[in-house]
Length: 579
Image 1 (spheres, rainbow, N blue to C red):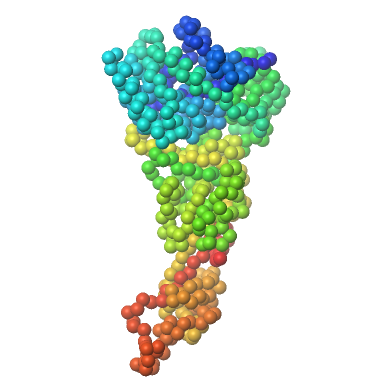
Image 2 (cartoon, rainbow, N blue to C red; image 1 turned 90 degrees about the vertical axis):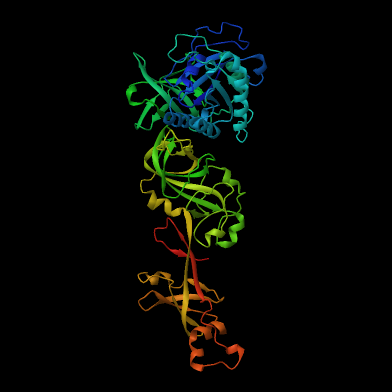
């Protein structure tokens, strides 16, 4: 049958106790026409799918008919996120289909820590937002107008630097008297629905790509089978097609499907539906992903394009651990940061990447052919690199990436959204705990990825060593000290090139003695000044007869020997490379 109801997904986010659940309940018990001229308290309820999922349906007003062609009604599916950890898991799980966010703010408290974190998640996952100033009933009637006006100005000021600048703000009282109060009529919820309808747009939906379904509830129906309700994240599926439940390693045939309580033959991206399969225990799947066979991957590690959250005040350092939210799961992961050298630094290192304007940078594929700079820390926008290496200080970093090694495998879509957080931080502090976000560019499914895949990732560290010339054995050879430690395997450094601070270029021939000294050949010979200073000839000849042969004062700065090379971090052979 033809369904002319548009499903529009609304994430309901906000600080704990801001009234998100009360607001979802108030909205879900009201079904109104576009003009809201019917009884606003009509008890025609939407489908209650789970504790965090509810819905309500409205007629499409004449003013929106052109924007929403082909539909006569809008079903608003509300995703109520009851707690911070659940917030991240739930919203990221449905990030690809959250069409609009309602940010619920306690009007008596304003922006709080978790409110700001919800705003951060909203910026990452959706393009439109409505701010709901809840608990209007807590303000004395005489002061309500001035309080709402003041809070609106404050919120708009806060949102100035975000994609939600100038967004609609509506003041309501979802449950006057609080959750424990007897049944009371919500205040201004009809105004909120009107604003929501005006903010509704035709989402970009496609039938292309693999079928991925975010199931949020699973239950059995006697005589029919097991129903999984949820939202289609991508692709499409039809009756009799086979679906995979990757977390359980099972495949099942689709027996029937329903949308809006009506049977359908096919569902596609953005649709809210129930899928019925047979011979499946519903207790095995509370929430999770269902897909066409092979559409999802189980990853051990991922490479992502990474961007730091502005509000996060901590540093994101290589080898540090974060809570990684990926698909429907959150696990600990170790982060290693690296960057693509910008065009201005190309002359410093051989075979580095071309300009950041390359078109592939906007894609979802990691380029293994390019070389990347190892970073001790993610560089925030506007900051220069603070690497200790003398050479690395001169390299300008463009786009940044991170290798994330997960503590346990996670099943997800190949190009999923990734969010890194510090969920173990004190929830009562004012610090934002969401640290970074990015998209998967390379999903590593091989358990032995450190041997099979990582060596192909050309992340290099620049290394610099510095010693001094001890003496010249002849015009074409010097002995250098303090360049290596006594226990260093000097054979590994044979034939590497060095530069003297006096300008000569040399090649390490090998060790000299047992104390870490090395012999360096100078193919083009030492300049006279360096040779006279370190050959010992001046001391034998005594006082020089002219200025040219005058001995160099002993207080003069010693001639330094500088060795620089790069080493690929994931190269199992640990080779040293010079340009």
